[in-house]
Image (cartoon, rainbow, N blue to C red):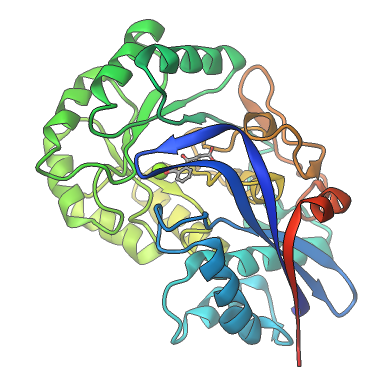
Length: 375
Ligand code: OSB
Ligand code: MG
């Protein structure tokens, strides 16, 4: 049983070690929305909303999510007794469209709270079967192909098991082919376009077909499936969908239309863990591999991604890089670490998130806070 009595929203400000550029914008300073929920016995769980600073990935931002949680999510969730966290997402869907990242922040925290109460790891609570996960790195657009080659080489040397290269028209073939030439035919490479192409400009992607990429992620519009199906017919390289998959229904549509062959699951984007598990299961039933994406999360959001990536059909290394990739100092102890072979351990022996949240440090980074309680 889960009964949430109080919810605190907080915005913290964290500086990335290096700016991260995708086709639609650059992030240097992360504004991160954290939620903290508490039940009647004083058990608490921290969660993270994966919305960004501006609506260049999906329609939400941390400011829209703040409003949505305060005005619409919290009133539906607070003070209600749920048999389990799996009841929350369906209740949040009734006459309440969109705002998946806002809904997910609270829904996922409820899963962590339930795990904490039951004394099991979040991984176990979700049905995870792995005690370590293999991870990759997502490299932002660099100033030159040579600069990208250096980053990619360093990443493989460090142990990352997949290198994702952000692309856009003009920073694509030259960049990816330089990395392929430098690192050899077996280097596990992929590209992510974040919607930068159209069917009209997609001939450039046909050229990428020759470079042996594991997949091309989300080349076309953020809400498109039909044109991706067209494009997949023209490409040998599997298309992986990220932005377009916002629910299990959209994953089923992708499969029915042939719009992609791999799914990047980001639990925030799909409204939380119930939908993430459903997408995982549907994909498994159709032989579609999945992997866990990232949204430049703090160590708190990362705990959720690590737990999700421990499910059996997460067979491709995810964008769940260790803390050192993003931050000089993360807000959890221990920080998320990766060994030389690209493994991150899943804290299966520890209840809940499996890491300590550094509340003092969060206090120092806090920019605003709002406490929401039942009236
Ligand atoms: O498309 O996967 C993406 C970051 C922000 C917005 C969109 C994306 C990304 C990443 C970062 O690729 C992955 C990470 O968190 O390391
Ligand atoms: Mg992506």
